[in-house]
Image 1: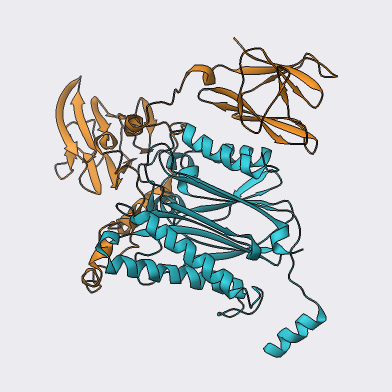
Image 2: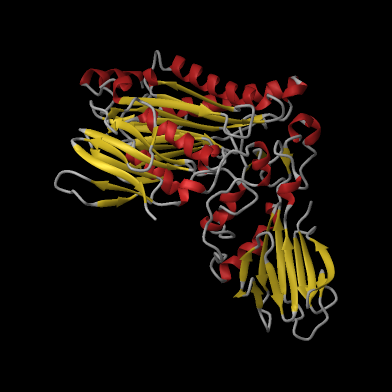
Length: 271
Length: 275
């Protein structure tokens, strides 16, 4: 279950370290949780702080520094399959526990207690039922991290935020969402009549509105299975290939002609 | 303008693409300007029970109390409106009922729920929330989150451990630090905000904001603000197109006119005598 680090050198695996402690240190000296006896490694080189399912790597002002996925870094929020390099050594971070839980358990909202005082009388006895869905807060250890975070501001973003993708567990229950196909191809609406004739509008956003607010507005939405047009406001409904739309979303096909507020437009895919 | 005429309200809920149950509950009572959304948690169908209790207690009790009183009257605590006291008191009441049900019936053990509620009165909105259900406000082109999640991730963001961008990659989503129904005592977070004509308020469960980026939520509510049913449908559709891993619920409230409480000399005089 727990995430782990796989230590290797020149492609040969040396040892695996499950991240079972809230804070694990990496360094040359023996007292480190992950001790690497090599002169390129500082006595206390780096630490990994794990809070529930998230792990954070930080450099403890080591002489030779750290690289994550080939980039020098001071602090890093570890993601599955990240490779930490210290000198000639590589530590691969593996956190694939999501694939091991059932879809039913995955991502259910749970309650966490506010930090419970250890000395407080055992409240558990009075409400045994309430403890079932609870997790013990580990926030008590925050100050150490806070302090570290203060030094360098905040954790650096190494990757741009990625849009949520259906994960393996989601796929098992819901295989039908095609991620590629039409949605990756950029579609265009070209104005055919009126003052703006010839103008092209690339549909790069998930949602593009057409028309005049207060008079007639329609929206073009980009979905995994293509583009759709829906009437938003106004007395008259848009026409597609001369046919009036209903209240429902209507899927657009290549070279469909949209007529809206007296203007004709053609829809097509660019490429 | 009467409150029911000043507000346009639309709500929709969907189980999502993965879950078989819908543990979210929504309710609207436009006649007293009240909207409530809850996202339940707990085994079997306990989540639905918890969110159902929360929503019905708050809606029934608040609207009942407001039949013979005005939300601008003086509330329980110093300098507080009755509207605020009613929200707090009844979220606490819901907390007690859920906690009691969980204690007395083994199949409901450990159930709880988040809640986000808005009471619109006197050109203001009192917002009460617990957990990670949210309220956003669209004013002009700007979409702003006006509640702060009671979640582990929010705490980590607050203390600078993790950036807002990195938070999307966290595997510790969905861990709430406060919930309705899991303990004997509960302090809901309540704030009062001024309301302007043209504002659009969005209440949602985390099934929306976990699946859909804030930018996409903004462009949707901004573009479709004159067609609330379509806006709600579009929001839910986007969550489902992105995987729909959780139940998705939204309530949209559009402010069409002013709804200041009557403040004639007679009303003032009466209020003065009551004190």
